[in-house]
Amino acid sequence: MHVQDAFFYLISALIVFCGIGMVTSKNVFHSASFLAVVLLLVGGLYLLLHAEFLAAVQVLVYVGAVVVLMVFAVMLTSQLGDVRVAQNNRLTLPALAASLVFLGVLVSVLLSHDWSATPAVQPAAGSFTNVQSIGQALLTTFAYPFEVVSLALLAALIGAIVIARKDEE
Image (cartoon, rainbow, N blue to C red; front, side):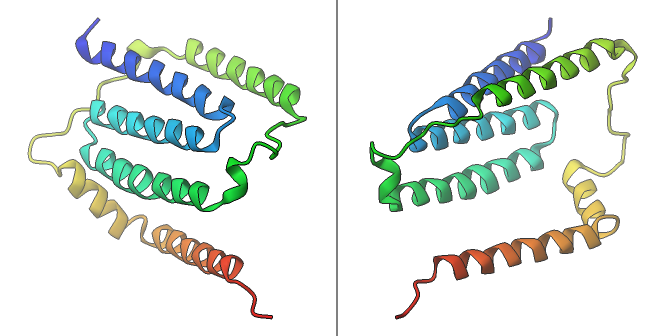
């Protein structure tokens, strides 16, 4: 086993542990903290895959923006910290059954794949770097979907402003 494989298994185990902690925590702030750790560890997986740009974007966008936004929302909402707010869900058993079915399908697909036949992808000499390849793809191949996503995010932002605005009566 190589050192990179050991790091992969360590990071993967930590992601699973923190993911379970995220969805089982009764405290919303603790769930957001577990989410931040999971997203940081996913950035670590990107580094193991030599995708430095994606790792930086993962940390800046998801950990730096989304998790901070969630923490502010939790801290500004007074009722979430109240003990009287019910945190129970009646769909625990169906969710567990669906998760076990998904786990079974995932394990069967992973075990049926011939992992030794998968070649390691190495950049050719003189080819684009990781960042240049992503920029080239975003500005040529994925320009239209990129703009559609930006419009969807703009619509979500406007919707959040409308919902959060206090009505003047």
